Amino acid sequence: MPLKIRKKTRKTLTCIVLFFLSALPAYADIVIGSWNIQNFGWDNQKNLSVVAQITNHFDLLAIQEVMNGQAMETLESEVEALSGESWSWMASHALGRSTYREHYAFLWRDSSVDYLDGAVVYIDDRDVFAREPYSARFRSLRTGTEFALGTVHITYGRNVGDRLPEVEALASYWSWLTEVYSDSPIILAGDFNLRPSHQGWSSLLALGAEPMITEGATTLSSIDGRYANLYDNIWLSEDTLEISQKGILTFPALFGMTHEQARSVVSDHTPVFIALANAILSPATQDTPDGAESGANVTISNCIELNSATAEDLERLPNIGSSRAQQIVNNRPWKEVSDLKNISGIGNSHLSDIKDSKLLCT
Image (cartoon, rainbow, N blue to C red; front, side, top):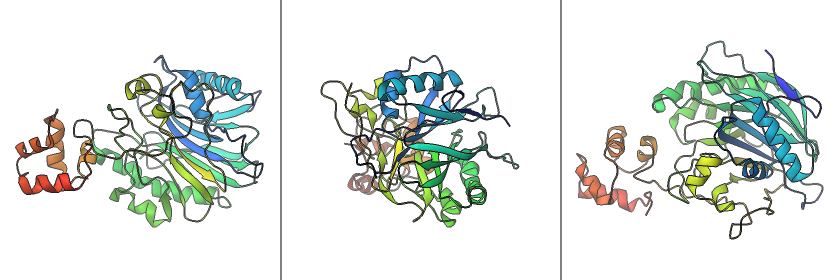
């Protein structure tokens, strides 16, 4: 099974992990991120300068939805020009069951992170995954910490039920990771297309894995400043690594972009990250537009927008089950919350419960 690795003289597809902590003391550790860059490599007018600046917030970045190797070649060049440092990257072969196929990639700053060994695509003998997870073992050059990093993009499908077989199979994958990288802490990052509070995670939770991001949301809604779903995450076992910071990098605010602009030329997903030991995500401020925020915005609205939320998220509202959630989706747009009384079974009492929950965007 051919895997591609680039370390200066050798090129291939990789996941991106980058770093912008030059102002920190030498003993600080690294920041690990995960990002779905939405069809990265297609001719879709990506603003590579912004993609590179976002990438440069991390030491190591796991990337999903890489469509071809040229995208990684170009991004590496952009990040090296921006940072003035060398980078290395590696990636899986193309994965998928149909003509639509993606690569997973890792990209890292050579002065901060070293690839050790074990780069491999999971052999899914039960054929559950549409895109089998990809993993490798790395070491922080700042503290010597070694760890294994796996990444996956769970299929979206037509509904939540289509995602559950892959999510449930992650328990078997996690057990495999702990056997293959038996002496290293395990990190699993990616786009899971399922909120971490869903009961579908019970098997993985039973193995001691925990989601690092439990509040906020990572997908951009159509309304500026509002985010729809907490689908992207990073999982690891409790107490295996010292985590100093974790969060979501809401880049539209950082770069002064509307959500429409961000979705069009960057991605419809925001990166998630963890910082090891005493590292802190410290974003680059050069080249940010006038009026843009100079720090990482990790405070995210997790409110539910009636006209853009998924049926799954609508079920978080009081008295809204799967049937009523689908009716809300089917009868959009909604002008007022009180109009929900047009749905069978939602009377004044249920409507008051929904309003009092304060889960709706106002």
